[in-house]
Image 1: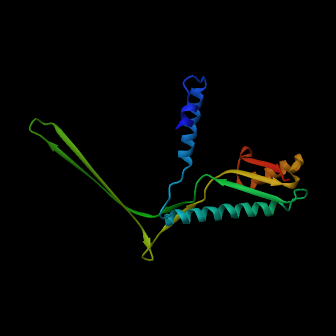
Image 2: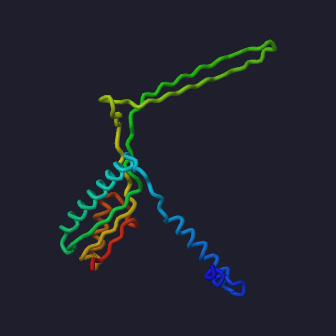
Image 3: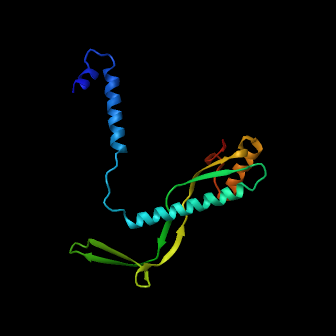
Length: 179
């Protein structure tokens, strides 16, 4: 307690800065603190594994391809994705629309519309949903670290190759020289 009193002494001109620093530090600790989780959701776990598998497969394939180019040398690649794979499931949708018109004694017409919609997943084999399509995640960024990246022509070729293979804009690709 004495430390806090000395730290926030009223005669000190930097009290506001110290308060802001303490607040930011407390906020940082709060945001980075991890609460213990009892059980990981199976779907989330499998999505992470699928996503990592897709990501790693792309990285390995790109590394293997780029390392074959003359002057490139050893290559390491890291790819980041925007989200996990999206799976579109078939659904059986039933909808109904009923309209009722009523005319009261004064001749005014009152119209009522009642719309109902119900959807169910289509299940095959008794337990698995029918998958219509799987949408792979969009690539957000690529880092390529290569021995030959010190040469401007090699660096340019690496960027163009990654753009062509993965359909990514040049500003999302960073190429660096390996140490």
